[in-house]
Image (cartoon, rainbow, N blue to C red; front, side, top):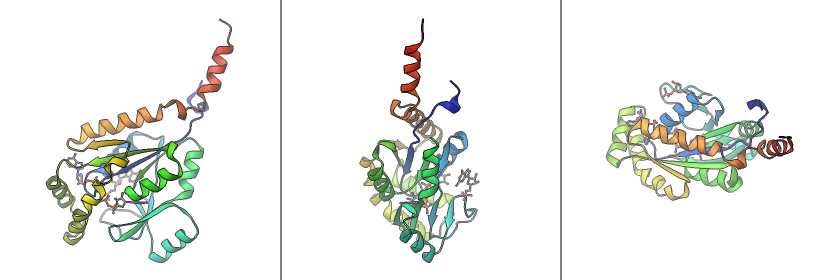
Length: 213
Ligand code: GDP
Ligand code: ADP
Ligand code: 5GP
């Protein structure tokens, strides 16, 4: 049976961590290696960092535009994070899932809770932990993309994010990047292979059983 006929149920892979733990780096690599995975590009009211491009990392929008999206119920979830609002546009996610594509979300614990509550059997949640608070701080400064006061605020909220680790299905300690990435790939592959996602399996087994030997 060609792969194109193997009808699947798409999954939503949610990755969360405190700022600086490495989720964006891990997600970017996973996206690059897996064409069957769509990134949910969030809307945000924060401004773009150096190097960020509107429509690639985020859709950078005004407070008014955010109010409009919330009012129109155009977001699958939204949350206030680090003094700004972030939300996941509903339509691209629903389109992707209906075609059996998987969707990757780089969102915080509030978004993870909200999406899980709506579609528990289609969600896989992964939490990324830093090896130490000292290393988290070093990475935020090494990334050199946020002002000192922004970094301080992100650090002061890190423990609030980490406090939600037990709500996730998997936890990766991001010490060595390549090892952490290998763990993420294993999780993704195992979860996509679950029997419940393969809508093609039952009819295929019926066909197999109907064949003369
Ligand atoms: P980062 O944490 O350094 O990657 O900084 P960002 O400014 O890119 O993201 C800040 C936080 O907002 C992170 O915890 C993200 O996971 C979270 N976030 C981004 N997009 C969304 C979204 O659409 N919904 C929710 N709930 N959280 C989001
Ligand atoms: P987040 O999206 O969680 O805020 P990033 O992916 O932007 O985190 O990572 C923060 C910084 O730490 C980046 O400069 C990134 O290159 C670096 N980094 C990520 N993972 C590791 C790792 N395992 N070891 C060392 N540095 C890392
Ligand atoms: P920055 O320079 O802000 O850290 O990140 C920009 C990078 O995003 C680009 O260099 C690009 O490689 C990376 N990127 C690669 N693939 C994707 C993708 O599918 N979605 C998003 N949002 N970014 C991607």
